[in-house]
Image (cartoon, rainbow, N blue to C red; front, side):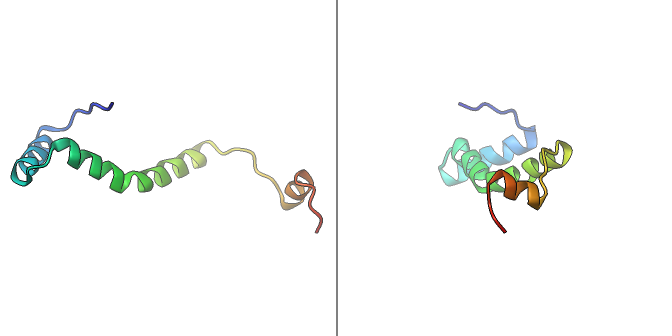
Length: 70
């Protein structure tokens, strides 16, 4: 379950769209989230990785860890 507060102007636009089309505001909110979730994940996970870098390996370290031969 998700509950969000929207700015009044956005809420009004959403209400108007739902009224004109016979669909629910929930339908349009869900569609917006589904359409943009991949982009948001890419963006914010990339920012997080830049701000909080993890362990980095050299090629030699990785090959040793995976027991690979060159």
